[in-house]
Amino acid sequence: MAVLRMPARGMHLHGRLRFSLIAAIFTAICCAPSGMHAQQQPDRPAAPALEFHSGFWVNLHHFLYLQARVRNDPAGGAPKAYATGTVTAGMTPAEQKTWNNAVAVYAQDWSSRDLLHSGVMPLINNRLAELENCPEITGKSASQCTSGLQSGLAAALIEAAPIYRARWWPEQDRENRAWIEALAPLLRTMGAKLGEQLAEVYQRPWPKGRYLVDVTWYAGPEGAYTSLDPVHVTIASHDPRNLGIGGLEMLLQGASYAVAQSVDETIAQDCRKAGKPIPRDLEPALLFYTTGDLVRRASSSAAPGPGDAAAGASNAPYELRNGLADHGWSEYQDMLERYWQPYLNGELSFDAAIARIVAIL
Image 1 (cartoon, rainbow, N blue to C red):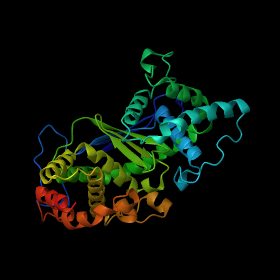
Image 2: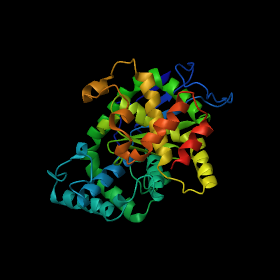
Image 3: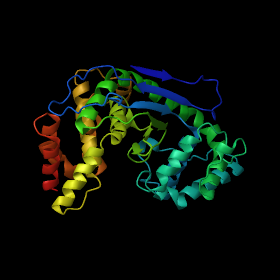
Image 4: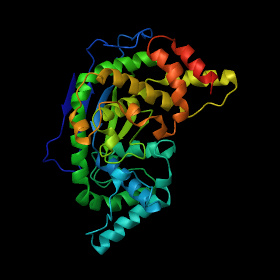
């Protein structure tokens, strides 16, 4: 069961734009991989509860980050789907100066940082998510709206906010809302089962509480990323990779970091025993592969959803359509097929599968 709550269209665009899509679990596992059932504690959920938001400040932050990347690298700073042309066309000279100054702040520093792996960037994203209800971030309207961000970054956001709100935010927010609405049926029909299966695969129950999902027009080169403590998934509504079943897969892969600590711990332990360096990309590649396999099984007999039809996409999950190579993880494809796939099929234990993967690193 899933519940979708959406704010009225007449509410102010800078107000709380909150969507709550809660994946409540009551269905039994269907077609789950055998031989790896984890014992769920009675008070621990079997699948994540996802709370969706389309927040003004988080979206503005990512849009300025995108524009700065394009400024620094016009040819390759953004995916083809994000070719925005001359964004200052139609602005007054004063607006052009204000907007260009804000983009320049991001271009000088922030846009060169990885949205996930640069330690401060997830903290900025988390703080801007907390400010979702705030019409401004200086603290003038309420003390809790004081951003606490680095002064130059805060100033860029404050200066760019009126222009972004007038020119881009209504359409980008509409696209975010439409993406959530399109994903809701897939989560209702497949989310509970897949959530239970992911918990079984990683042999951990889902932590209590709701997981924040910020839907943004742009969410970095990969189209989505997840930070932990707290779990915060950021996923792009405009990225064609995130349409239809691909969006479900990317969302669940992002959420699964909350339950996949066993993978990271076991890889690190086995690498230390073998005297090998711990590969940073092995865990995300394994999670990416796993979610793709489970979604493939769950969707093998399902008809393409509206998003798939609109995009002309196949019903195959993202991992199978685009491959691990798109993320720079092609070196892991063969070992995952040889040693992790048997675990997903119930033919090999979790520990044995990880040990064999680490042995051939």
